[in-house]
Image (spheres, rainbow, N blue to C red):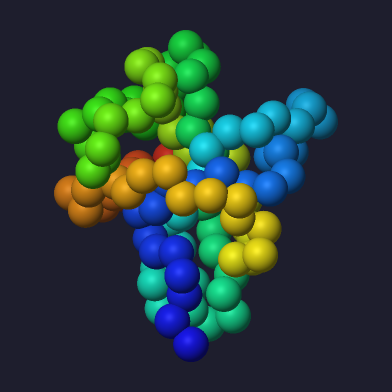
Amino acid sequence: MPAKFHQGDLIFLKDPIPLPDGKTLDHPVLIISSNIANAYENSYTGVMMTSSTKTDKFSFQVDDLMFESPLDKRGCQLRLYIIVGFKESDIRVFKNRMKPPFLQAVLKQIRDAVFS
């Protein structure tokens, strides 16, 4: 059965995201897993978006031009090492969709920075 959500979708989860320091926060998540993987068992992999000002090799700055519609906040970034797995039933709401060229850049930076 096809997955309801797709690679590049920006969503919110029902439960807050656990962070490396043990805190949990309600942040948007960009789905990075392929549509084939998403449909396999309606399970997804994503990275967290934040408005943190920290900039390092694990940061991917995003803006309105990268998405199909404007973001709710300015100065956002994806934190590429905060990778979360979740089921379709864990998704609260769809918010936006990243345009394909920018999604490919995100995936490349994840490969280079996180899995190199």
